[in-house]
Image 1: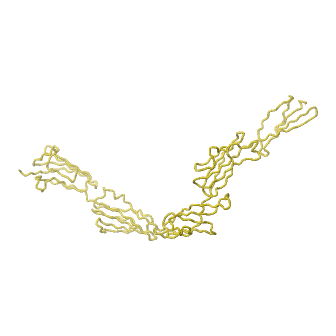
Image 2: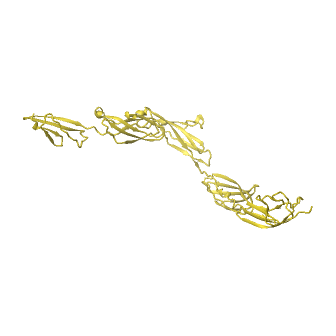
Image 3: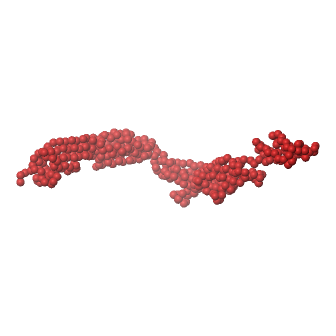
Length: 427
């Protein structure tokens, strides 16, 4: 062999020559084309004019795609068959060996999930939802990884035949559902609120304002379902109400005790939903009507007493609703009146020093002798002084002094000071 005339040609990247017997050559393949997915390495030899050539074809392992195919479930809640896409022609040479699947927490499987990375086919179903994202990363025998391929698997919509709904009016049981079943594509089974005789009817009448459930049986609309595959879906139908009115008015202001004294002017805040006409009725605690109004938000003045408020609301469809509040309490104005003499002699006549009062929320009275010493005090406005001192001994006849403080429920502050005479008959 003429070593000086032996050379190698890396296809498309020039020549390298050598004069060494059984020599080798190092080469780098900087780029490659997937079409064709190989590169030719050519060996040429010239031995004193005798030449020969040989070619070494270098094949490129393609980067995995992470692609997969799937079937739409036959019915909602059924399984989907998910298959990773592999190159069957090259599977033996440089095929995929690992499959990294990712599913949401609602997925359920027909195989052991612990071995997911070693299987190219998954059978999965979902316990809820209608759209489910599945992700896959694949790895070949050389450790090449695909990118993350995410695909959404949509379940077929539930069987939902066209229908005509007639709403109820004024919460009466006069609603109606008509299920259209052209060409008899479906079979229906209503819930057990319907008589058994009419549980498979397409028309249901005399319905109330609420939800009704019907089971629908019909052929699958999934493009991947086998012919003759039937599904059973649950359909929830709401019968709405027309003309509904809900009478309501604000009663929080009635809890205001500061402004609950006679006379009390109240502005009513109507919060009715769906109302068109209104009638307000005002009654005392004996059932006597004391006033009325047809204004939406009337203003009315109440005097001392307890009152019942009634609002009757009517919608434009003549539906009526009524709400009542009892009782609105109106108290007298606060008051403190102090006597100037009493005689605690046990004759039942003016035996206690009683302070006339009304509508007080705070009260305190202190009795002093002429030297300014406190001899008695109390905080209950309904009580008084019986002429005895704190020690229990009877106070002697004479002049005493008081300080009365209080706050009325109408927020009026009281500070009364004065004198009184305690008179005892000589024994």
